[in-house]
Length: 334
Image 1 (cartoon, rainbow, N blue to C red):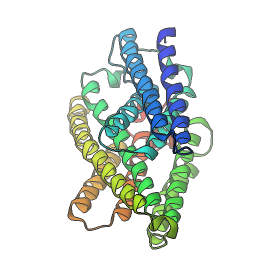
Image 2 (cartoon, rainbow, N blue to C red; image 1 turned 90 degrees about the horizontal axis):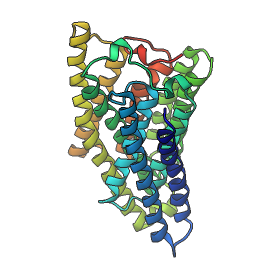
Image 3 (cartoon, rainbow, N blue to C red; image 1 turned 90 degrees about the vertical axis):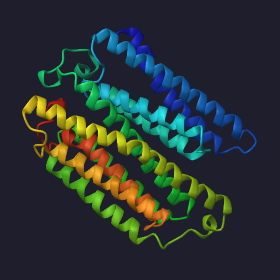
Image 4 (tube, helix red, strand yellow; image 1 turned 135 degrees about the vertical axis):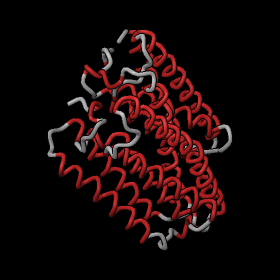
């Protein structure tokens, strides 16, 4: 990795951290709230531009499409997260989503910075990835994952604005527990069976308790008309994110089948990661159906979007870090 590329990547990472704190600070002042939000969005835009140039520079240095290992996929994920948020800002006044989006991007930068130097260095492709299908199949998936994460974060904000604080606490606790399992699986020597249990148990118990707690409301928030409007807005933002991510995931699954047939002689082999991608696709198909038919309230759909976030996390990072194995195990680095 060249010094120029490292400088650009660090600039993008620091910009995500800086925008996070400016977004947080904007909540503490009514007088300068508008100015603070503009500054935060501007800092986020600087980071997005720097990361775009960093990714292009890495591709030029590597003389290949710059998406071949976990580190590079994390750069793309952060890029899609920042770009997705900036796009949504054009249509919605999503103040609270700003600090969550920047925190998500900063977390991915931090996660990537802790990876071994072999991930950061530009190295020849493993044989399984030497194919033109790589740049057709992988980018839509990464962008869809980022949009699904933004949808899940919007679901958390919907629960907050609608006064379902107990359900929100269960959802946040679940995401923290599942993310901790991913982190421990990546950087520690903890038995992966225990981490699999932690991830699955938290992903089942947390949403169940969140659904059970939905009737419990915070009276102060419930009485605010502004909060009701904000809750409706975040419900719409979540749906917009899923509407963008779902067709991209569909494209990724279809092109993945075509690549699999080209590489392995079969369109579908029920590989664990393939199967999990299908489960994730079905979960968002159900979300879209329930959202259009209005079979569930916005608060229940918010929990469904959080479940989708957990499935996306498992599909994207879980199978390599938690030791599920399969034909996609070449993405594992330890």
